[in-house]
Image (cartoon, rainbow, N blue to C red; front, side):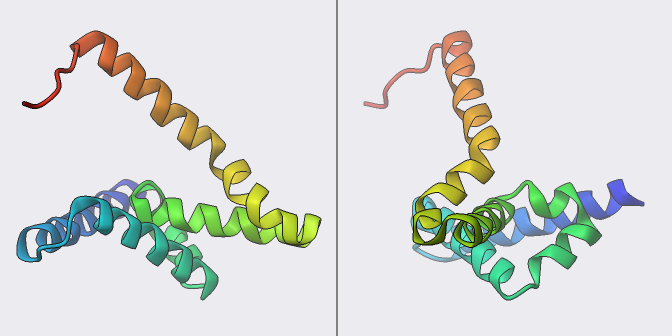
Length: 118
């Protein structure tokens, strides 16, 4: 049942974002920033963690989950380091995900040899 919940929740998030991209004039970058900020806000309100417990990777993998991870990291670092934690926490909590994205993007660029648009 965990796989089913992850699949339909992740799919619903992707479908809602696709509708937002198709039906509004918002640029993709702004939509991505909005999703990260919404995930951080939902984490701050205590709503996102129960959602992750229900949906697993379907809720933690999309950009909403990245925003929630940033929030949790900042919250823990502020408790430990004070004001300096604002700058340390988000990167410390999401370093593995950011590193993986950069490494896999680099490997894909080597394998597929991307070209600039004209």
